[in-house]
Image (tube, rainbow, N blue to C red; front, top):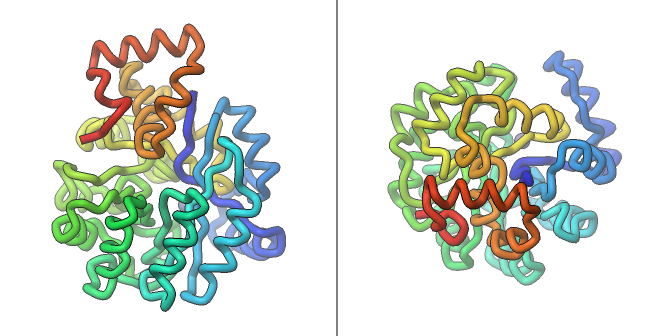
Length: 297
Ligand SMILES: [Zn+2]
């Protein structure tokens, strides 16, 4: 079973604008349409049980309406909405309360798009509000496929954030810093506390051997599978993780268990494990202990 912790869907008019423009500018194939139905189809083909939707708001004013939309198209166990957030938005706490009341477990911030430094003291209000509500923060980390001068969310700045807010459950996308993995090693490892890393879009810039090494150095209990749909096909992305050479228990942790624990769905879904999956679970229990199902230290 697979949980994809990093996907994006867009309202139709937004997808029509940004996907062709990105294809042109980045000269990359975009396998998905960004529509919820298309994501569901690709999930089914890839055996993905659940996808976390990460909406991206550029401006402070865009947040609430985008969150309304993503919550309206999510639902069930399959599509789990996270909220968009802007660290400097005016009604920050009210928006987080609104999301939490609807069962939303986390939010995404996008330093590069929002032009915010994650270690800016003004972000403290967001981090404290999230800790108080036990919500997860997912953050784009590192560069994007464009060569922009200013990165904003660098591994070094996130390391400062982690130091100041050790209780913040922080998931750094793209293995801690897209195209900045030397700095990830320098500043974010050994990863401890409440920091996690996802694998979204990494395979376009890093070979399987380096990816395996970095995942092992971070620790497979802290790494979550993400595809970055529609920019990548979930099936292809999951296949890459499955064939890296991780042992079965490690792969199971990355592809499912770590995400299930973070989303607190582990117990509910593990009761429906098939016999084959149950065997994986038993292997995992014997190799890294049953603790992974209930908590990640
Ligand atoms: Zn993404």
